[in-house]
Every structure is written in C-alpha cells, then in structure tokens.
Image (cartoon, rainbow, N blue to C red; front, side, top):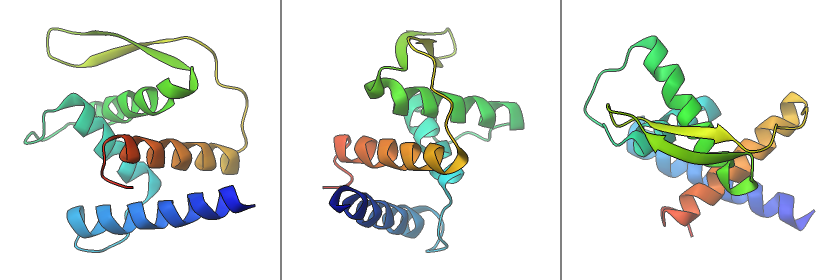
Length: 118
C-alpha cells in the first residue's frame, strides 16, 4: 500500500509542476504528459506538429517510457532525427486502469531520471 501512496504523491507533484509550466495551472492529463515526453525525446521543441506526427510523438514517448521495463529497445535515429525502437517483449494484456498505473509509474520514473522530480 505504501508504494501506491508514494506513486500517487509523486504523480500529483508531477502533474502540478508540468501543469504550471505548460498549461497555466490547468491540470494536464496523462496523454498530454506522454506527448510532452515525445517532444522532449525528439528534441524539436519549436515546431508545429500535424496530427499523425503527434501520434508518432506519443509512440516515441511510450517506447522510451517502457524501455526500462524491457518492452522496447532504442534502435536508431532516422534521417529526420526521429528515434526508432524495436519491440523486445510484447506487453501483457492490461486493463485500462492497469495501463494507466504502468504509464504513471513510468512517467514518474522518467522525470526522476531527468531530475525534474526528486
């Protein structure tokens, strides 16, 4: 139970910090935070993205976030600088709530690694 409490506290801190930085305090949702990770990983910050590129940014983020769990492995950067990953292990079937918890845990870990959270 303590692990869940720590994750909940860290998640709330992350949402608060990112929301203040990127959305004038309006709480960011999980998908928006995943998108921010995709932009961070691509490193092309001052660009307008088309709908399909936004989906690709979210895919980059999910691969990067789940890489430490052994599901993906970085493969290469293409000629446009976009990172590509290969599947190492298929994700197990998860219920929506379980997916959300996994992504929140992965996001908190990512932002701790990047020293945005403690």
